[in-house]
Amino acid sequence: KPDDPKLLEVANRVVAAGANLVGVLAHAGESYGLSTADALVKAAENERSATVRAAETLRAHGHACPIVSLGSTPTAHFTENLEGVTELRAGVYMFFDLVQHGVGVCGLDDIAISVLATVIGAKPEKGWVLVDAGWMALSRDRGTANQKHDQGYGVVCDEKGRVLEDVIVAQASQEHGILAIRAGSGKSMPDLPLGSRVRILPNHACAMAAQHDFYSVVNGESPEIEARWERIRGW
Amino acid sequence: KPDDPKLLEVANRVVAAGANLVGVLAHAGESYGLSTADALVKAAENERSATVRAAETLRAHGHACPIVSLGSTPTAHFTENLEGVTELRAGVYMFFDLVQHGVGVCGLDDIAISVLATVIGAKPEKGWVLVDAGWMALSRDRGTANQKHDQGYGVVCDEKGRVLEDVIVAQASQEHGILAIRAGSGKSMPDLPLGSRVRILPNHACAMAAQHDFYSVVNGESPEIEARWERIRGW
Image 1: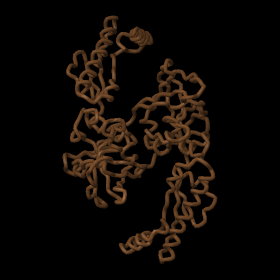
Image 2: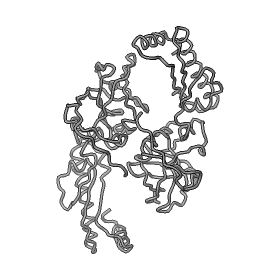
Image 3: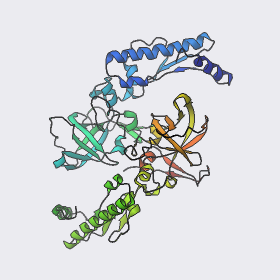
Image 4: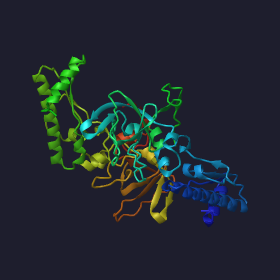
């Protein structure tokens, strides 16, 4: 908190202990609870002004404090002013995901990461299609559970990445996922024969990616794998 | 289902398609909802008898069906009769976890897997101690949430693996966990200074292990790492 006397006290202690104070860092985690552009613009400005004020307080007391670092993908996307900021950390920004879609940060078409799964069974009497991707592939992240649209364990697309309207991963066990029509939808399940493949968009890109060793990079709708990116480990 | 005519129909189709029918396989997933020894013994016998009857039906119609395979750690632990069974698959059996403890399958002391975490902060006014293990280390599995004792994201032990009574990982963000006293407990938070280390027992051994690349094997309370086991990948 920029006005808390502890800010300066901590900085002085850090320096007295022989460490190098290089700057201040914030993460506007509360932005994930918002869902309108107005509120996100305000949250971004609040994050910026509080962090810059903290840096100014430290500078006024003799600390150089060269780095002013902001985080959070929602505020990074809606910021209108970055005065005084030297670094923007926005982890999900490069992939986006269903949580960000629910916050209003991106469209479904902007989500650039998915799990490719194969249809392995069906229970037509329950309206279920079974795929070989459960929470070991999708993660257990249910970050959309408290949003306006609960997306289950993910939104289902065809193999080319085109959204199958109202089809979600309704349930997930360790190795298997159950595709079903979203509750309350008037749609019926599209034809997904055994062996056909679907792409599942994640609730949370970080959590889904962490379940895998590498990324297979494709370009648009082409199935050709153009590159293999190893995942960076450790946190 | 052993009495369903589809059992024989599927077997005949498998063989007609040129495949080799080697046996039958069951997983008593419903056993995870139980919590008494009596109910678990009954579930185990139900699993066994249904699976053996399925094999006998197939054999009566000319299929050799040499393998009769059962699963589920709770039923494997409480079975009193394995007549006719050739294979027992019980994945969590080797480590156990808090879900199994909640079902009544094991004691806390039987849990042989934990995440070693370091204390990195505290908010005494909230009764919180912060550690460098969030859901990226512990998984998002909240398998005890609907059990009698909700264990949050894990039960906290000292570095030697001795349970700190009523201390759980109450909240988890991506990289950080919040240790706190279980709601309703009369205990107060033990002294956990910055830099001290704790061991966190998992809700679900499979989900926690899948967040890591390898196992560091220790013997009892000794901190010495005796072996490094690579994790088997794919599912």
